[in-house]
Amino acid sequence: MRISARNRLKGTIVEVTKGATTAHVRIDVGGSLVTASITNDAVDELGLVVGGEAYAVVKASDVMVAVDD
Image 1 (cartoon, helix red, strand yellow):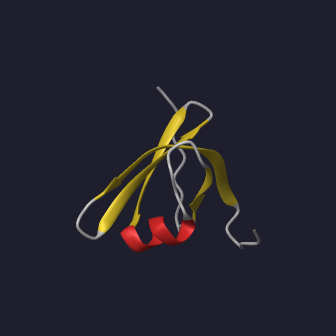
Image 2: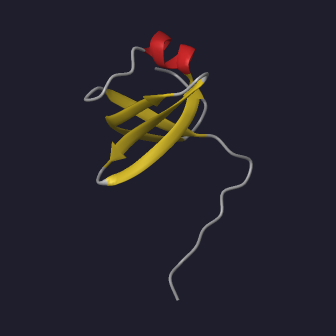
């Protein structure tokens, strides 16, 4: 895979829930869950299944940083 985005989080798919047109894909990244909303077609084209490996790719113009008080 070659991609310009630098925020790539590799993990394991733990849940794929398809709706009418959009699916929610949950990826376990080192114990933290990341949820992506993508099309059902994308799920099928990428062959996403529970237990498979995938990357959560974050591409945003703004990324905020926070710390606990």
